[in-house]
Image (cartoon, rainbow, N blue to C red; front, side):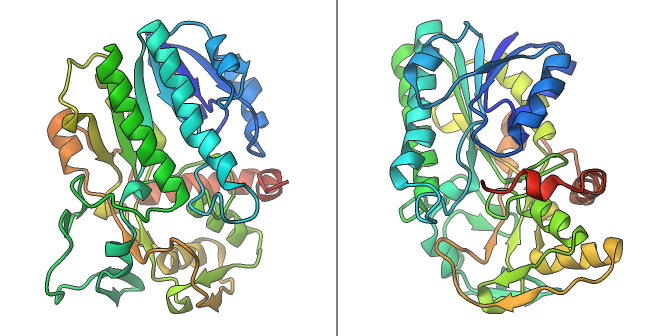
Length: 356
């Protein structure tokens, strides 16, 4: 299978490219190296036989010039939920990158009759029902209150399923991804190529760039190990907010099934992929893990709320299991161990991947 991967030198693109090459696929990838640290993945990918092209997702002429492929895996995006409002990236730049880039790739798929797989996000789900969700703290982590009168539609003890509300506000980032999903499904229906939308939980693993807004697990472990200042932001400054985590390589068996899949209904082209409740943890629990592995380190409480913050989000991947017989393979403890080993071997990682 000839595959084209966007953002191939980013953490997710790089991880998938390596695994797909090992599975026997021919990979061409492109990157604009806008993310600090991404350039370090170029030479190792080339040594594995990946053809890496310098191209910018935002420019149609760059994408139009790429060689033909059977499937496109869109692993490129500005993944920060604060993008567009944090003073680092303008709202127009965010939309140009995340939505305009999707449009350019869809035009490529239209021209080459290539399939399209969008790696989407849990942040397409509505913020309001999550910020107003009644939660309790237990063992240093929030969870939905068992005494709540009723849970929002689409939320169970296993997490959010695909019927959970996607009504705004989502964040500008979430809105660009939700719009990309809709556009991809429309293009696939109109021009006759397969499209799959894989909504992922927090992706994490060794080699993820150490940015708090883009890879909290990698950032926290690297910062703890280097004794950098850390804060529990919002929610009383206790660090009880919870996320699930998933290693990108666990998506590879799914992707290979999607390459060969028969036509699906539009509804079945969208599914959650996450580590689920078994992988979920709070910052406080992550700190406890770091203390056990690296010794104590102070974390300052700071209850200042931030835009788009939510106390708890865990994705239910039951639909993915039903449709694709898919399960996450890498437990959270193994992901943390892998990040820690990489952090110990790369003392410069935080500085290498810091904003410039």
